[in-house]
Length: 341
Picture 1 (cartoon, rainbow, N blue to C red):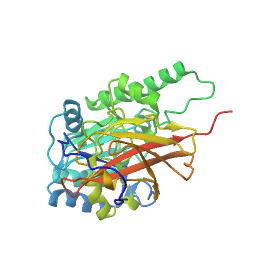
Picture 2 (cartoon, rainbow, N blue to C red):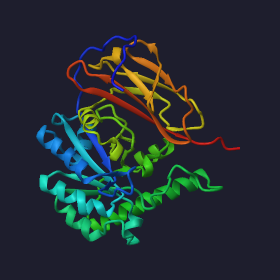
Picture 3 (spheres, rainbow, N blue to C red):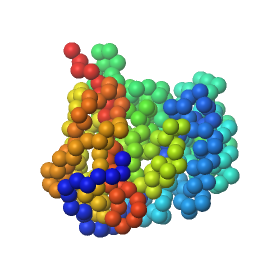
Picture 4 (cartoon, helix red, strand yellow):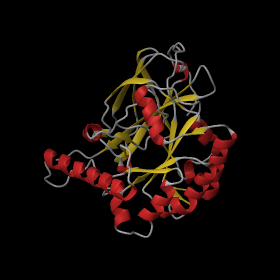
């Protein structure tokens, strides 16, 4: 994913602004769920990597505030996030993060906790964790597919339902834990433009499940996070992700991930900077896409040759940094649905 020689001119080096990488986990040591699990050994190796290589693991709120204010962050800043509040977070991840003094954020879907489902943490465990570096944020009340309207549901009714869902979760977090930051992780990483705008309207910073670093130009309605699972925990790839930089995207068309198109076009405009765009490479899955330059070194279009699958997928683009051995990374998620007849 990190090669090619395509017709474009390297942009001139300019300050990159605040940069960070956010990782997203779900389960720890639950090998029955390899698609959302990391082994305890993998997690320890990743934490050791941060420590030995002098990464700065920061509270997620601190990273978000730096992005909002365009305030510098330490080099190699990392945010650790965990979705769904499974019990293995308390049993396996929490002791290891606590031992290193690493802050982290758990995004909680509150119904699962309130219902006392055994696979999830309880509020008392979260209160204990909160005293030792953990923060807890909104992952909705229902953990539903929020983009999807119910049968015969109007736009106004959908918006009201989602507002209530998010507000109820925020209320439960505040009631049980005393504090809940204005951070929201989309269940399943699914969102569309309407939901992005609603999350912004409600005063939240949103988080997806697509890849890439975060920087001053990142869309705070849907910040990227690198998903971690057993298959993606190879340390060579992990190192590249941990050191990645946010591609300075100033415009993308479309913004909306929701599409009925089997082969959607994506147009991306890049700000001048230190990305070596001669070596820009874009992929859908493991298939390389042709890059069509509209304005060389600035604006390009990509389109998959193979049909997008129904549901979630993404286009990924990377380019090496002229100033270091790191890579700029950009990901656009897609949520393909069937045409309604």
